[in-house]
Length: 569
Image (cartoon, rainbow, N blue to C red):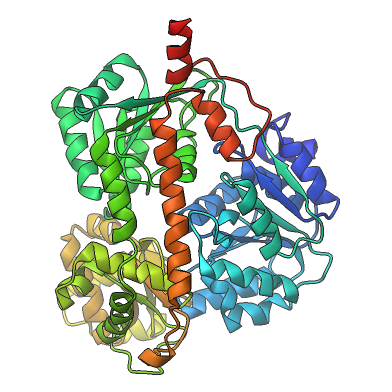
């Protein structure tokens, strides 16, 4: 184990919990690993997979994280590939062929890919070493982030040889959720390894504040170093960042509605210290390994302790003193409770949204099964004059019922391929010297255009040929119309993956009993966070540890409640 760790990662020792998990996996045992944020979950399956023949299949709901992991493994000389929504059929076909016949160690898949015939046909030919489920809490309806596509994993497991172990990983799971994960994945034995969630260097502070902006400025001035501020709405991310800048604090907003390049640049500036504070929705943080974050501030109250604990845990990964501060007031409590009911619109409204989505996409009844299409919520709501928020939650409810999946915003570059041979291209009259020059720029920047689709960077082409960015897209369209290239424009949009054909109202199954049960579970999550923030005695750290099933606890001595108790003594 340590030789593999040293060879590929350059470390001489494992983090707490990792060695025990890896040993369990190497013994061929199904293993559920619950490690806190920053605990190094990826190492727990990557090391054993490198020690065993075959390819390791990793199921993850986060496309951006999959891409990062594939790139990181590649930099270490480890062959890995990913398959997710937005790729062309040919790209997926080639990737799965490589998984069968190539020298690859890891295949990352988004959960909706598991149900496709293309994947299942190739799966039979793969020499699978391990089946890994990242963010495993998504398989549990008792959890805070249930994804119906995760239920497909049990069927995939049934197609694998019985001796292929399952490795499930998550940063947040209550005891009930942990048991449900093992049930859903058909664990042969209950093997749960849970890390120590106590963070002695992290001080939890909950502060009631009517003037949140004033409190945030005190936090920024009183704690040196970089920070993350979490807000609930996209517009608040940019507005709050602007207010911080106006007070002389280097800050930038970040949310999923921004373009891929903008998000990447904002993230890089924060990671290298050019920007001190990043103000974000919960779109930010997954896979971000910045050890020296000195504070995480929740400007708005999150709707679950699971989400709060994961986000707060991004502070102080270097082991030095850090702070997780949550600001709240009575209006937050009202908003939380109101949000629960907003996120569960009436069933009749949800059924109506189901039919409107298919109308918007142009699918008749009994059509659409297996389609993967770009979907703009804003355009959809505008088209039917709907409340965007209410429509969004109706779409999410239908997703929880298994009819479709709305992915995170995808940023996939444009792709082109020449449809004529190199010799034929030279004989064709392109119509102008400028177009001739444009084709030469393409050929100079991108070899291989005559044999396969090649991802292109519109801005790079524009800079190289001294064109306006808009002109490049126009020239690509012109070449496509002349049938000289195949051109797939860039995707910067969520994708709607449709699992079933469009159903008639009478066949759409959305039971009222299930609706009430889900609403009840959401209310329980909200009541837990309200109970946490309104506590006036005890210890914040102990409260969180017990919530996640860690019974051996002791007061941290550094949270706001412990400090207040010590003052009273």
